[in-house]
Image (cartoon, rainbow, N blue to C red; front, side, top):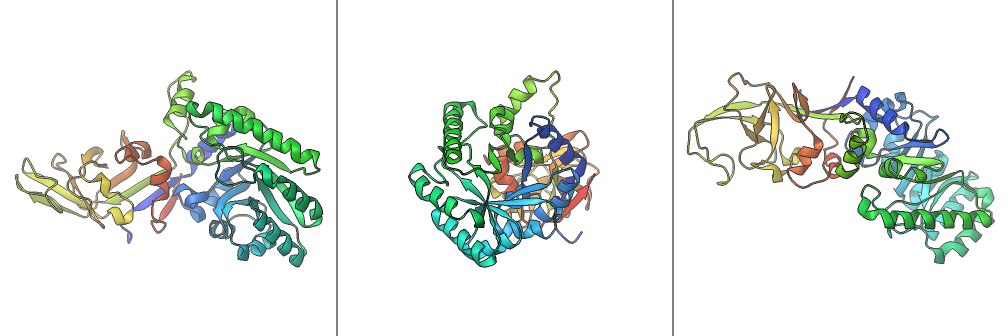
Length: 383
């Protein structure tokens, strides 16, 4: 192993998660898997071929850079949309490659029309409308000019979708806000249709929308975090588990993160460990170094708080997490040796360190922790 750690991606767990979410979705609804944020830290180029094996044929990314990565490995028959950043210089590239993309400003629409005319090829666009999240999307004040441009340039545009994004569908505290968004979205779509704008897909639902608001399953759904084995919120997880006959979590984490013991040292009682004076041994101790630190995705906030698995036991991080390594207390592991497997996230024997528990240690979200995993950690697909 030349790298200090590696990530395993489970094919069977991915298939399980996709099948579970699909079981909630209407048969006539197109399933789009969101692979933004380097496929939520799992690795776009490593995971896309496996996702295709699981029966998914439509991907959603945030930027042109992510689209380039996916394009290099996906099948030609699979569709792709860009939901966010797309410089005007890359619009012709997207059109030429048949990639659809969100349009949420008049300037992007005008640039799309210009490029489509020059290329003599239709631009496939999703009109994003603002329904209450107040992030990106056309507002009602834009509609007259927007609709006029769309109607005047029908021969240069393919209206792939009209879409919006729900502002917190994972929590019941946002119920009124979500209902207002749903109602406004339908009013907007009706208005566009009355004016002769008929999209191929109406789409509004994310993972939380699919699972919490079935009425948001229109022509297409954009499912992200749940595909990877994580719930949009603990609240939603508990609601689904309590509704089941058993209490077994139907979602399974696809990702495991592992390293090895680099060295072992014997430290006398009363000695400080690592930088500063944050940890003082209270007994003669055995400490193992693990070649993963905050420079490799293991947060410095986990100093004296983190846990890892070694020899099927949970052991504590001691002292300050360094840039390139951490130290863990293995005093109670009589058989530990250099080269032993260290599980940072995942299962070893009967024990597991989940992303949820890992992120709870330093108050970060599943999404944040996963997407911070460095791109250069090797990803290995396992069954």
